[in-house]
Amino acid sequence: MIRSFREIISCAKERGPKTVAVAVAQDAEVLAAVSEAADKGIAKAILVGDKSRIQKIALEMGINIQGFEIIDEADKVMACSKAVEMVSLGRADIVMKGIIDTSVILKAVLSDETLRGKNVLSHIGVTEVKGYGKLFIFSDPGMNIAPDLSQKAQIVENSVSLAKALDNDNPMVGIVCAVEKVNPKMPATLDAQQLVIMNQEGRIKDCVIGGPFALDNAVSAEAAKHKGINHPVAGNADILIVPDIEAGNILYKSLVYFARAKCAGLVVGANVPIVVTSRADNQEAKLNSIALAVLLANK
Image (cartoon, rainbow, N blue to C red):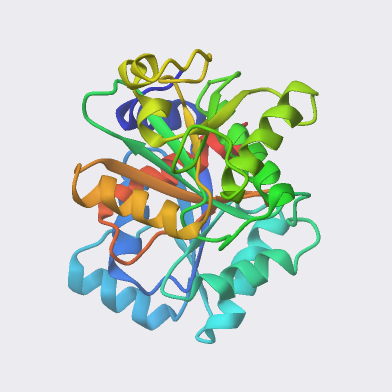
């Protein structure tokens, strides 16, 4: 099982390179990330966007884009469509968002029948938190606002797919709520109970689901023991499924800004990985996300 971003980068070198189609690529941080990925042998890139601006930014910032194909398309919506087309035609393996709203690039992906998957699209964060000795996968911090039970089941499946790309064939999935007991007044705990049943009945496969868990007894064996929780996932979760986007977004940013965790993020559920990073994400996070997408594209 891959346990760190250092290992992700190493494995991506071994299993890559894959080709990333960057939509609206005239962005310094995105260009720097794909350039570094190319230097490390992780990924190649096709840059789709305003060619003159891409070249100007690269020149001014000292970013090496030699060897990258550039498709000149100043219209941002069309640039997204052309980036998606590169994947659909088999010329690229991964879609990456440049300087464009996430909704626009996702609309382009969903408009292509060959790329649209069977599951709902969901955002997945991966973090490396000092002191834990493994990666945490959590979802959904960035797309599905208030997922219902069916959507949560698909979010679990998407997360398990990513865990497999990290060589974890039977991940421990913790359904995180505010409390660890089922409470009819708290719908998230009822969903957690149902997800556990779905897993036990074989409707959600290739993982072990436990919950509801409060965050402490999902990731801390000591906290789980203190509260008398005896379950394989308790204190040992690899995947954390949050109740809604607010909880997920706050968890993600808390880990990054308070815990200084290393991070990466992808949108999963389509037939190809989609690298969707925030402008606030640093270059390391963007590189980590590209490397993570390479592993998922290889699965």
